[in-house]
Image (cartoon, rainbow, N blue to C red; front, top):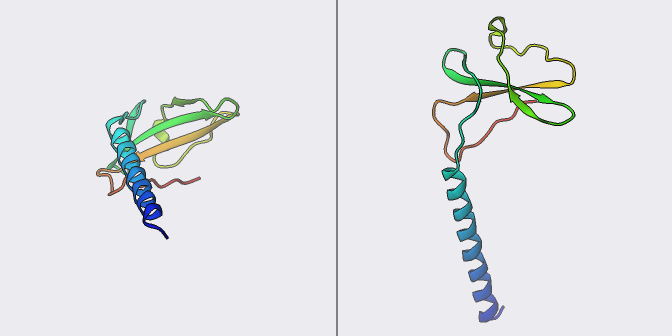
Amino acid sequence: MTISRIMKSILLTVLAGAFVCSWATRAAESYVPFEGEKTTWHDDFERFDYVMDEESFAITPFKRPDTEKFAVGNPAKGQRRCIVVVPKKAAAGNPWSWQG
């Protein structure tokens, strides 16, 4: 490999790193809190409930029934229930856990 190719490779690596860092910074600065009513999950965690329309994929806040507790009730036909449980403290790197 020639010095010219090595220098190009290093330059591309540095530019890619700068782009990723810039993107991560903008993502962190554009935090938007969850909308809708905040309830609790197992008395310790914040919980937000939503329904998603199966045709349009529109997501709207949903007030869960008081009798529902920790389960998920049956949604209306053509809708899917979505629940977000927020950790007390975000883990390093902000990993997400999805459950279908």
